[in-house]
Image (tube, rainbow, N blue to C red):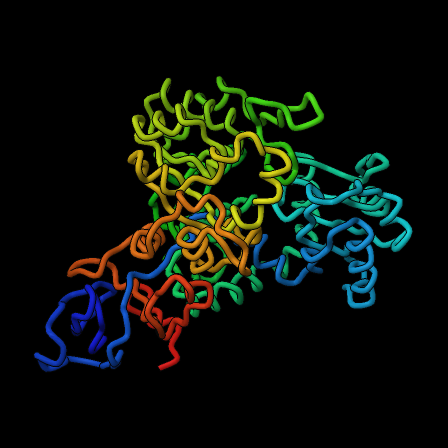
Length: 470
């Protein structure tokens, strides 16, 4: 196949020949006779296909079918949205809503409020950051969980409850995953790192092969299974699916006020939640390395990031930190010196700027760094953390470049990067002979003001067209 009259490197027009999933030839436009099918790009900008380096694939696919409470600014508004959705719920299944942002509310959740709207129907409201949930008494009875008067569960308890609820629709979820991933080509996506909370490697072994590349993560509880499977990072699983990194969650999140920090949250003595003690983290890194698993360590608070870097330093193992949302100057320099990468989600910055002001106000300059990480020499990649933010790399690219949306003033604009840098941090390949034919053709030039709605006219994964408007 030939992609004809593609624009790369400024205004240079080339023909791109593709065979067996790789780029085999770059030649001046229409200077040679094509040997197969031709797609005329008519001067459109051709870029390497985009990766989302942090997705919870099953959770994301399921969440698209949940009640959305992101617009709610109070528990009462959430309850009203859930009440309106009750008549449309599947009989016999819990009613689940997503997108709760209680960190910005003026009042606290109450179990009684959900009991009043659904005393005999289990209801669970999952936070936008996935680290907490708010449920009614009927949900507690269903799962045999003792809920206090708030109905709130946080961190491991919430993850466990949400996983059990999702298990009730396991027979449907695999189909929803396939349907959801079939649509990502329209945003130029060619690959995702699946860090879902289930056994993602096992799940991808039974699912239909996806239309995009997938690196499926492994959690500590699945290390025995990984060892039995020989599931080292990079090992093929199913079609374009490979084994991904070892994912370890060491702390919580800003929205749930469980990110582990050096200083307590305002008005409390609480510094957040440390999920994995330093000595246990070091041992997990060693075991993962012995199995051939590259580590991806979730760390959001500055203290959690410091401890993650301590573990990397004492083991001599290299990998990356997921999120790295709050970093001191000292740890930013250590990160670069140790060769530790950062997998960050720029759109979180725009969602959480109010949370930063409320809970990290005195350390705001240490939050959501992009330019500083790059200037220090850290390898950075972009993702969405979908469903926390939409699976759309253009939102991350726009956030990193403009540091704003919806007309608000740019937030800490000195941390911005240019468009070409943001595109590079969102891709794994180049347009060159021998590179994977993972490509996207744009409908407009990627100027900062249009990044969030960038039209993508063609996407190709491993030489196969997965989306086209041509």
